[in-house]
Image 1: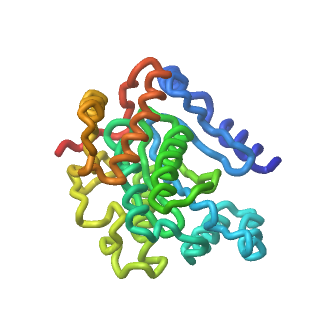
Image 2: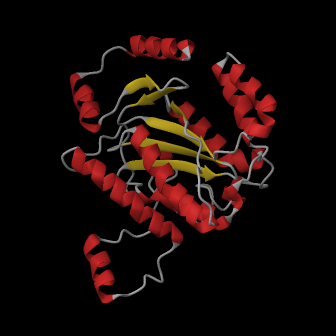
Image 3: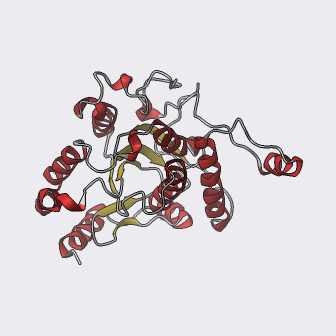
Length: 290
């Protein structure tokens, strides 16, 4: 047990103080936990917050190189530790399954599928062995959202690669964004990661990123709610799916990413039903209309 992490979570809860009654009710209805930990890292889970999230492939820190990266987790300063780990991930170690364009596209499609419905996705990048996302929480707690992302994309990726086994590392890293300056710094880091890792000359050159020109936004100020105008796969209703199956027709035009997105839909629908139906989106920032 990491006593330092548990103490950090207690300190953050004390610093934040009790939530307002309306906030507490909204968080409780969605199953949000506020500050918590599973023994490794502190997490913050509350609707309406903007979060920077990072999750990596299971072998992004290879066991054969444990002596190299194990010392990184011993760094006491949290910011310095994170900086060193990110730099290590950018070396592109492990199998780097996300280098495969099919797999990267499938992961990107899963990220985008719930955008505008369960959360607002403001920035993202799919790197060779990890993923960064900047997301505003709406109807799903952070833990369940990451679980849905990872579970759906892992099934799709393993099917595309013809492999069994664990795809993502169990833990993930997250940090809630305090203000506009923090948001813009996180956005620049996410979209500039391929340049920093010497994979692209410019952020917009990386194909699996929110900086790529194929994505059109409703406004330039994503902090205040700019939305994607081309948010990815179309939702296929259950009625349409049943009709296709009854007629014995093959869904030839469905992409691998769309298949994964529909699996994600099933997972989030189940969560919604458990919450007594879809919750009203509680946003901390106004939405910019297209």
